Length: 199
Image (cartoon, rainbow, N blue to C red; front, side, top):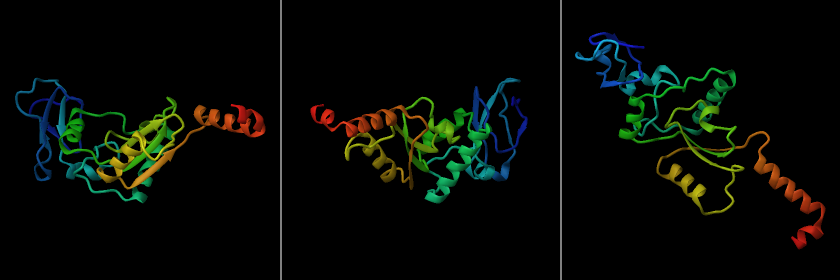
C-alpha cells in the first residue's frame, strides 16, 4: 500500500501514514498523491464519507456527521461484527491517522452503548469487530449497575442524552468470576441462614 507522488489512488482508501492529505470529492476521484512526497513514502488519504460510506464495515469511522442508527440496525451491526470475530475474519483491525482526525474534528456518535465485564478475556470492541467511534463501552467486574447514581449510570446517560445512541446492551460472558463469586456467596448464605445472620 505504498504510493508515490502523482500516482492515482482510487477510493475508498485509508493507508498508514507518514504524509497525509485530504482527497477531493467524488467527482474528482481518483485522488493523486501530492507532488513532492518522496518515492516510497506511505501516505494517509482522507476520503470524504460520501465516497466510503457504502463500502462496508472496517472502512470508515462513525462520527457526529453520520445519521443516527436505529436500535434494530445497531443490533444487526453488532451481530455481523461478532460473526466476523467468531469466524476469525475481522475487518476493524487497522486504524489510520485520517480516521483518528475525523473523530477529533467531527466528534463521536456511537451507535450502541455496551455495559460489559472488565474481564480481560472479553474485550468488547474486539468481539464486535468495532472501530473507534462505533460503540460506547462501559466495563466493570460483573457488568453491573448496582446504584441509581454513579459513573456507570452517569456515563450511560451521557451516551444516550448527548451522543444520541439508541441501543443499550448489557453484555455478560461465560465463566465470569464476579458473577460466580456473588452467586456462591448468596447460595451459601441461603443454605445457612444462621451464618448469614451473624455475618
